[in-house]
Structures are given as C-alpha cells and as structure tokens.
Length: 375
Image (tube, rainbow, N blue to C red; front, top):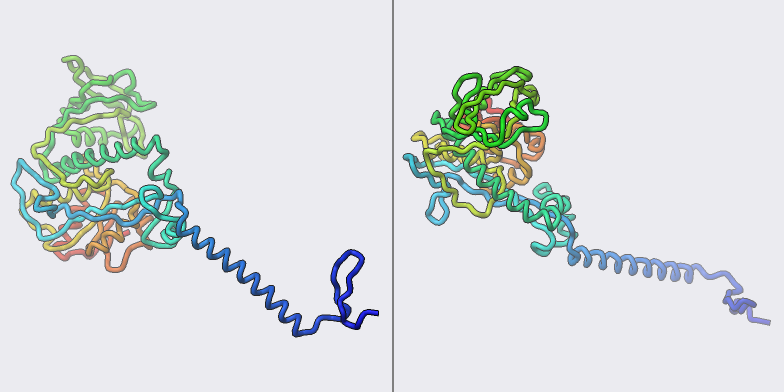
C-alpha cells in the first residue's frame, strides 16, 4: 500500500498526488508561472522595440524646412537679385518658409520614428505615395515642382510690378478651351487676344478685369489676332463660383521691364510666390516698410495678385518661429489649418491678396498692428 501522500501513477501514465498541495507550494508555483509570463512579455517587448528601431517604414515624415530671407544674401549675393531698376536696402526680414519631407529609402528611419513623428505637433506622417507618387510618377512630380518654382518667380515679379503701378505688357496666346466653354470652335489655339468688348487689353491684369466686370452668362465679344487679321467672336461667359469666365486657357508671355534672379536651387513648388512678391516690392521702393521687423509667410501668387492656399502650413509656422520671426502671413484659405497650431510668440495675419500682404508688412513696420486680420 503506497505511503500517504506519495505520488501514484494512473493507467494513462499521468502523475497525481494523493494529498492537496500545501499553500507554500501553490505560491511557489504561481510565482514561477508569473515569472515565466513576464519573461515572455519582456522578450516580446524587446523584440518589438528592436523592430521599431530597425525596420524601414513606407511612410513620409514632414517637418519644418529651412527659411530664406528674400531681402537677405547668400554667400555675399542677394537672394533675390534685381537688375534694370534702382533698388533700396531694408532693415527687416521677409522669410519664405518651406517643408522638409523625408521617407524610408532616402535616409534611414524606422517605424519608431514614424510613430514619434505622428505624435508630434511639429511633424506630420502620410503614406509616401501621397508625397512622392509611384516610382514612375516621382520624376514627373519633381519636374513639375521645378516648373512651378520658376513660374511662381515670374508671377511674383509681374504681380509686384502691377501692385506698384507699373503695368507689364503681355502677349495673351489662346492655348485651348475648357470643357463646356462657349468659345469652343470660335477661339482657336494660337489666337492672340487683343481686345474685350472693343476695348484693348495689353496686360493680363486688364484682361482679367475686363472679363471679371461681366456677370456669368453675359455675352462677351473677344477680339483676337489670327493669321495677320483681327477676328471678333461673341459668346456667353461661364459661371465660376459666381464669377464670369470665358473658359479659355491663356498662356501669357510677359515683357518684363526688370530681370529678377533667385539664388535658391533647393526649393520647389509655387508656395514661395507671395514672399517673392513682397521682397521685390520692398527692394523697389525707397521706403523701409519693415523698419527692422521679422516677417515670415507663405502662399502662392498669381499675376493678378491673388494669394492662394498651400500645404504644410502647420510645419511652416514652426519653421518661422524657429527662425525668430514675430509675424507670419498666411493665405486666408489656410486659416482652418492655422487655428490651434500657432507657436507661442508668433502672430498670424490672414491675407487674401498681395495688396493685403503689403499693407500688413507696412503696418507691422510702423507698429500699427491693431485690427490686422488673424485666423
């Protein structure tokens, strides 16, 4: 007969005990199991942390990029160099802001970095395809960014001169008609627009004003030069959010009275247009608009002086603050992105046109900032 408490072996080969386990042994077993679980969990956490630090992530991480003072110099050369007209010095700064975007492959970063960026108000994270496109699209996107960069410089020059009261003559070539345009079949590719309703239009701004003076649906007479002769076609305007448009793609060639050279080759896209325009205006006017003030900003600009929205404005706000700017000019259409994201010490002014922006920097320089529109 087995001794009480001795283990016995059953028919199936399992080992059992004849008496209940003591409290002390139960505690030891529980402690052992807990230790095993914690060891496994710790190992899993270590593996996860290791993976986060070494596994590349298919995301793009964006943050504040460098800023450039359009009134300053780079290696002793003016960042924005103007020839063909007298220029004047300024005691302030007009900083264009940029966004720097990196991705796995361009430099080593990991899922851990992506998660840290996602949690930071100073950075943003998106799938890298949203920024760079597919491999076949990336090169085309980079080329387009450079085209936009160059075009924005021309638009900035034209809008600055027009705002200062210097009309810029332009040859306005018809490049095609939009879908649904009443001008289809009437205005032909290669035509040159010379008059609206019998009044000569010599600048792109005059063309925009003449068409904009009509109401959507109004008949409009457009005179073009075609094969050495003038032809006038009459058709109805279209409605573009309440504004009259003729539904024609116009490719203007400007006869600029000055040459503007920009000494930056590391920036792409159109978002520096506003700060270029303001820099040109400041350099061409004898008055010191800023009087030492540091102003940063962003926004596209077209040849009529309209300021357009841009991407990445939250990052640009931080870049401006890091560069020591006290004021930031933001496109009014970006205000929803600005609210709640303004760094301490930075004041934001919402602008809709180049005239708005020029008035803002003049008032900032004069210390007359009460009532400037914010976001």
